[in-house]
Image (cartoon, rainbow, N blue to C red; front, top):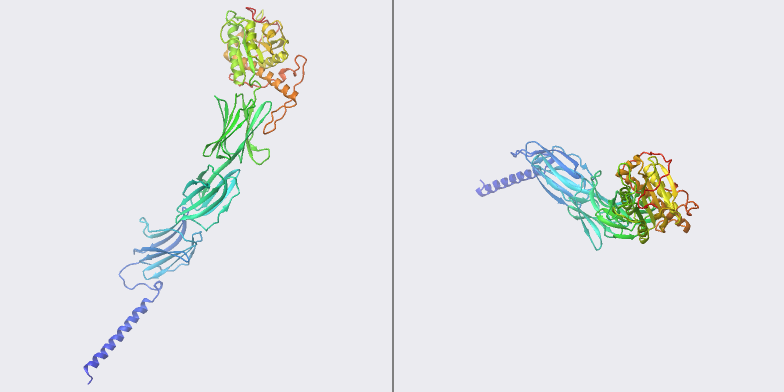
Length: 620
């Protein structure tokens, strides 16, 4: 019989052996892979991972894990480095089958892998091309999804000039939000793009341009990309998202306005604005004072605000300024205005810039003094028509209209009377002489011994050279404007005011007061306006002829300017005054702008020679 102590020792040894075997079995069971096993009766139902997919949503790379089954799952995430990757553990889930890695390569995500990490944890691994921020969420509206969202991507920058318009372009995925600022010393524009990651690590990009030196891009913070445009000098700009390419943010420097130029010729001054490309432009004429305004949109002035002094009798000066952030205003100041033409836009003469130009009509009347003499007045009514219309009222009204037109064209008009007062003939001549007038035009209405004579005629005295030329020009323009019968020009040395005037002069018989048809026309304010305009155009034509003749005699037809202008042709010669052919050949169109309706119908018969209106010896 064995001692009791020995039996107890043997029992203890057996117990320890059995306990060790049980522990070994437990460790062996725990070592079985989770993807190849299901949990023992744990009492908790697990969610099933039924899908993993990648999509780009509003420019953001998005990985979505879809869950099935009745079990509830949660998640936890963390980042790893070397290589960079994001790990999302889905707790309380199983993966029925292990899919192949999902290749993405969008610049941030390289590929997506998923596997059963343990019996109740499925691990999602997002392999990254570079470190990046992200968000992981399980939407309340759809808790059966776990969504991993990455920022938008900035994929590149570029500086380009298209049709003369310079811009820095930031390319990305989706519509990028941005905030801009300007820094100085040195000048630069900063564009911060929030919720974005810079793809790659691009080096600074040199730029050879008058506006920018280089463009730099960097990851300023985990979720902000900073793009810097280093400028040659401070400038204005605008930033916008391209409407047809929403993934682009454009720093727009617009078209550059390089400057302005002018060229003066006998009949006009050409003002041109140089630009890169052809920006939108609005051209407006303003008055008081006279000026033409050109507003160039989407444009930047290449140099500081400046003024170009011209002073050629058509243009005083040209002013250039940055009127708004992206609007350049060019103002052409003028001493008067009679007309302008917008010329076709296109490349400049050298082809190195584009050009927007206006041609401004040059007035030969500028700084000329014209004495305008309304016939009769006061106690002298002049001719009286059958309706009771008095010549003195007609001549004063036409003369006032004529004076206003001449002033508008840059001349100084001196009226020998401005009211219904008597002014004797020597006083009329003296007023013109004291004013040092360059021409004298007396306005009358004709009268015949019967009611048959009709039409227009202009009288002159050849005591002063070029009076016949002035009469020809006035007669031709007046007939052209009114459409009335042309009775031509005649020399009348018996008429005091044109005989004694010391400057070229003429006396205009507009129509016949004694002809009822023409008297009714003279009553009409619209016809009086036509008559005044016709006389003004004739005076214009006369001084334009003198300007051309003088320039031709001097051997040049244009003032030297920044651009060359052509010479004017010399008119022919006639024996009366050393001038050209009949002024009817040189009468311009309506250089004084029309304001009323069409000319009256031609009427009347010119068989009887008219005489000047009587009373107080006005005409003689």
